[in-house]
Each structure stands twice: as structure tokens, then as C-alpha cells.
Length: 422
Image (cartoon, rainbow, N blue to C red):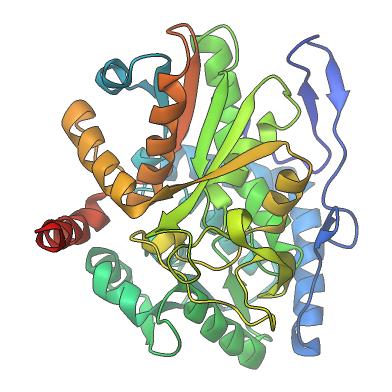
């Protein structure tokens, strides 16, 4: 299929079937409504302007689009298929549950869609080094893979706690030639990895590009990452129309920073008959520090160069967060998700650790698929939604990644829960 990127999109209205011009977001200042923007030290302003200019030139360059499309097809293995989770659907009762199988991409997750695009932009800007942050390790592996493919030196910052619980991905990054730098400060998780990557970028901006892995950070990153990831939703629309003769009733995706959800939701936003549901990390409960549900419990604030919903105290200091899933363990969220929340286009819910761990096992046992712990949050919510619908309804879940990376940590957490329950 055509994976062309669009800044000004046209989409089909699901009721009338007529083309409807969408409001173009973000605006020229990088705002999604009141959210987004660019709150960075002066050191980075020129680099962000250069990136924005290179991106706008690239998406209007047929050679760039052809090169990216060929990589997505021949290297990544796109399009990723839709899959009917028959036994899982039978277990839940109600609607049919379908997966958009991003776990089948090369490197095992959706992250590669973005890193290949940004690696091409790096070369277009004439920069010779790439840095990245990673939580669950999937973005780190995808960045290391893109850098190995193009022969670009790569440094990945990763919280020391995430290094511990994501050892398979740490090994994979190193095998690809990347240098993995554990971050021992703060909570030793994703937030701290981003902090260190930002410090590196400020000191090395002349020859370094920072590939941010989610729809967070200063403009133009939220737009760029969303657009590179929107191949997920565009494929899902085309596949749904082919397989079902219509669009799904509900589309579900997990939300940490929010890149897989943004990529899945964005092409559906104009199809107002399709319900969109984002699932955050409910962790161990709704008290401060026990979860990572920024949209459910956060307040508007600035984090990592962008204005969005942030988990913060009365003084505006970022709160500690928790999730069994390293990829959702972040105290903020992409500004477009904040915009979708406030305009009520997307409904955001949360899933706690116990439910996500249970769902990991259920999907493995019923479908023979190990879903990433991040994806398990989305599937858990989809199971509840499906149970309340009819057999003719379709609930489509973005299965954002595979769970091989999580298997050891899942086993440890389940054993820990069993011990604590005695």
C-alpha cells in the first residue's frame, strides 16, 4: 500500500462517505490546541528549526518517500496483518477482538516505523551521530537497528532499573553495535533516560540527532513521530475495509508517551463513528507514585520541552511513577493525546499491573501470542469493552509489540504477587 506521509490529510467521513478536510494540527507554532509548543534551552532552538525544515522538505520529496516505503516493506515487513483473536473473543463473549500485529515487525514492535524515518532525516541533515532514550528497550533496539543498517554511531540512554528488567533488549542493542548508557539518577527509569539524552544533545547538537521514541518532547517531534507511526492506522483502515467491509466499532491502544496510540488513532480521528480508547498504566492504584496515568490523574504542565498533562505535585515538581511495564513508566504524555482528551475525541482509561499480568498469560494461553506488557494493558481494556458488545461488533487492538522481552519479568512479578498473597 502507499505509505505516503500527509501533513494536510483528507479522510472519509464514516457516515456519508464524502471527503472531509481535517483541521491541520499542530499549528505553525507546534500547538495542538493549547498543548505542545517548544520549551527548550536556546542551544537546541536552531537544531529543532533545522529538523522541522528537513522534515517538511523530506515529506515533499518523492525519493525520500520511496526510500522509506521500501524500507518499511522490505526491511520491516509491512504491512503488519490484522488477526482475529478467536479463542480470546470466545472467552470474553460479546464482540470480535482483532489485533493489529505490530509485534510481527522487524525488531518486534512499532518503534522501527519511526526510527527508520528519523535516521533518514539524520543523514539528510548531514549529522553523523545518533542518540536515543529507551524504557522497555524496544525504541532502543529499533534505533540501534536503524543505525546499524545505515552505519551511524549510536548511544542509547536507559534507566538502570529498566536495564535490569529488560536484559534481552539490552543485549540486542549491544549486538547491533550501540553503546548503552545506564542512568543511575532519579527513579532510574524512562524519565531519567530522557533527561540524560537531552543533556547529551545540548552538548553535541552540531553533529548529533536525538531520535525521540514517542510523541513527546518539543515541536516538531510530536508531529514527526505521529506521522511516521500513522502508517499503522492507515493500514488498519484499508485492511478493515477489505476484511470487514467497514471500519471497526472501537480501536484500542496503550498509552505511555503515546506513539503507538497516536499512530493508530490519527488516521481514525475523522471517522467519528469509530470509538477510540487509550489505555494508561494504572500500576498499583490511584495514589501518587503508584501509577503512570498522566491523562487520568495529571494536570497541565511542562515536561521535556512540551506542554501537556503531567503527573506533578502542588509545586509543579514531577512525581515518581510506577508500572510493571517499563514502556509505560512515564510521568507525562504526548500533547496530541492531551488535545484529544480535552476535545473528548479519545476516551482514556487505565489498567492496573495485576490485570495486565493476567492478560499477558491469557493471550499466551488462548492465542499462542506473547504480547508486550505494554500491549497487555490495551488488550485487557479491549476484553472488557468486547464483553459489553454484540457478536457483530469489532474491537481492534494495536498489539504494539511482542512480549519475549517481558517473559522473565512477568514470571518474577507473578511469583512476587503469589508470595505477597499468602
